[in-house]
Length: 278
Image (tube, rainbow, N blue to C red; front, side):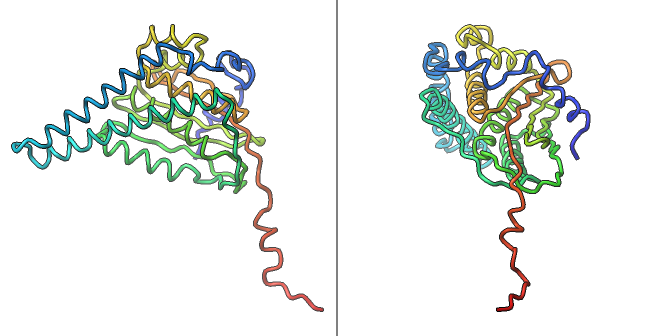
């Protein structure tokens, strides 16, 4: 069940100083990706790092002294590097596409209850494959009387993936919580962790100069993920904010409009088991 303390915490979101709404940073976010030299430099460095890792582990796998367990480990490392490289490209290009105004919201009907089940299964597989045995994934979804809502599920999940990736990067042990609650035609999602990334994530989330922020915190991967998340949420007409979870852990929340789909099933099944006399 959803934690009431989190629900009450989110209820006062309109008064938060550190909240980012859909209008206050519109000019700041525009072209922040394609006009940031530090981001381009960081992209180049990350690409070379992952490509070197792929080459190195591929070479080690050819060694005749390499055991089967070593080959499996090297194979997982290659797969992880490839996924991070692809994810890096996807986030950067998606952010640039939004800058150019070529991306629009696409809301569709989706089931509200248990909507994160498939996504959480994906996350658990990532943690298993990366050997994150000391990191627990917790689901705190809400059970609602509303069965379906209009939501751009693809882009919402894109944001949650970005926030989850940051949480994993900054949390070596403890937990990551992922959940949501629905109220008054608004759905609020959250990703909480017990890690060490709060001050860095807060800087990237509220920065007006990404170049300066990258000088302070040399973490291009987190910067791109949060930049993309902000742009997607603004595009959806939503808001995003961050709080400290514990001493240094991050609690990132974002809200987006999500109207109830109405009595869809009633309309479809209106004449089932009904006799019509003519």
